[in-house]
Image (cartoon, rainbow, N blue to C red):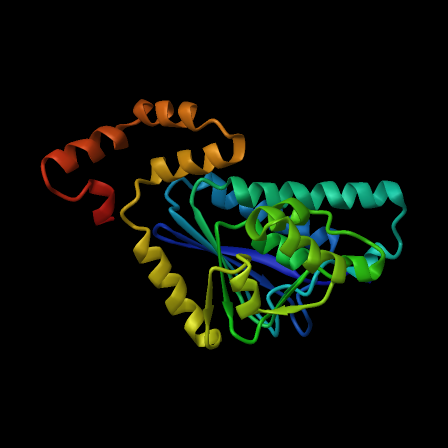
Amino acid sequence: MASNTIARVTFDGHLATVTIATEGGLNVMSSAAIAQLGKVIDEVAENREIRFAVIRAEGKVFVAGADIREMMEYDADSAQDFGELGSAVCDAIEALPCITVAAIHGAALGGGLEIALATDFRIATVNAKISLPETTLGLIPGWGGVPRACLLAGVSAATRLIFGGVPISAEEAKSIGLVDEVVPDVGALDDAVKALRASLAKGSPTAIAMVKQALCDGDDVGAFADCFNGPESREGMAAFTEKRPAKWMKD
């Protein structure tokens, strides 16, 4: 039986909150759950008012991984389909034009960590466990977790994590670059997310989207030029010369 994990989104001004939840159980990403998360991410992408999106979870953990019971029924073709689906959703998270952060509590394991690695920032509670345990199941991370972990932590630290499959603490994850900030408990997560959002408020929404585009395709010159196609570059430069805040800083 597949997990009954669901994803939903709420919008509050410039903020989108994506919540992963499972009534009466752990958050586990079945094919249906990851597909629903993909639809929610599409909703965020289509809302051009959104400047900041947080991915959080209800229950004991952030996400405990992919649905092993479902995967036990796979052959190579169905595994290919599942991998492509999960990869597409994580790629969509990475490609969101707004700033994204994963608020992690309890554990981010396997596919759950792969979802978190696709965000711009990760904040975790001090007791959270971080792991890519797929090799202990005779598998590998299949949703982009290998290259993203290597990019953030370096090849040596990332492959040590992946080859061993052993969970590490939030503090250790921070020390190798997989987590950006560690907070004392779940109650502190919201405050940390708010503080991060406030610290990044001066950046032009369009410019931030162009930076993220350049990170994805490597064309920073093209993204720089594209900034001049919209009004925010003119407004930002005018605000600088006139010694006033740009309009988007007042939103």
